[in-house]
Image 1: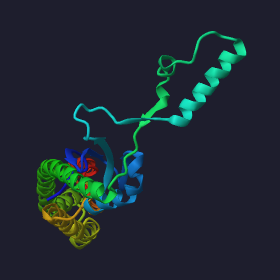
Image 2: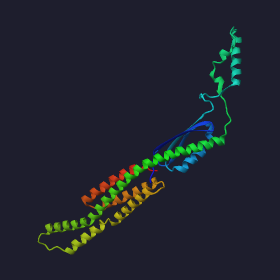
Image 3: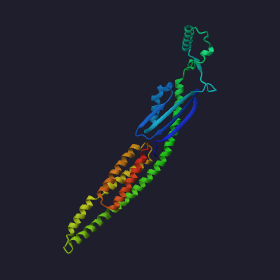
Length: 294
């Protein structure tokens, strides 16, 4: 079972009189990168949150947004208090202006109430342990949802990759079956060409056999075919496994390309060349797909 690196998870719940919302989305990335957006009041939890995420995911760019709102007021308003030092400063400054300019107006409550920065949110001492327990559970739920989506997309990716590997294996079998025929055809072409050039001269058949043997040795692709089949088998086993496979299958694709290139360079046969091009085309599509595999 493989997992995609793209997904989304969102959970919102109330815990300890706080409405906590955790939203997670992940994108392709070669390594694991975690970006957090959260209130400054819980910034000390950043390391612990990243640790929890790192225990669940091994690759991908994961963006996490955490929002925490008070649930204490039913009307949704925030508890405010006066910034008394600032109130006194404003009053002093206004009084100074009045005295300096001999203004008849008095400094009134109506005048002072217009300054919005005189009202600040009331600081409530948080039960941080209780808050973390609630946040930890909601974070776990969000990661579960993100994982579910990554698994669903991974299943679709797995089916596509398996089909492409099956096609590559079929093309490889055609190449393997074609290999002996290539040698036979070469022997016939060589023999016909020699007879055409020598006409009535007696030809040394042993020399022809020797040339054919040399070509057969140079164009032998048995080792490359066996290795490529082995790589395909390993690839399919990884698709069925439970662990993260992105880096492993990327390496296997590199090895498959190396074997296919060698097969293409060894064989001078046009039909084999066509099959090699088809395999390389499929491998390119597979490599593009596995960039999204965890």
